[in-house]
Length: 104
Image (cartoon, rainbow, N blue to C red; front, side, top):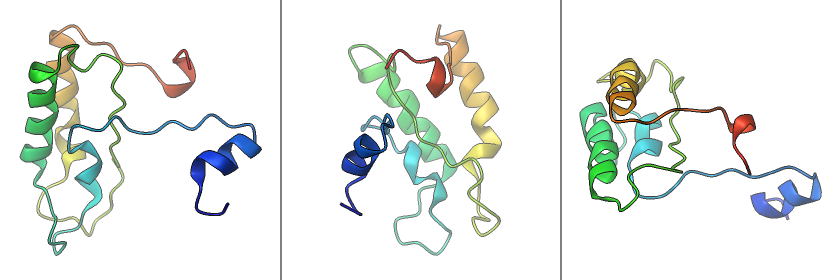
């Protein structure tokens, strides 16, 4: 059960929360040399594109971002533009809550 996050979470009476698939938000921790490196503007664009194209926008989405991705990602860091992205989404009517404030 070591590799089964859902199983060990359940055994420890923990609620497992995962990202919602559909954006590139979770790719922000890829390092410069990674062949799958995604530039910060492309990550933000994927989030905003999903917001426009999804029937319910980003309502209920869990965007996973590694805001402390570290100094080895030197080309650009999505966390540097996070404030701007959140401001854009706020203008579009979104509000943000912590995981413990969600009705799980």
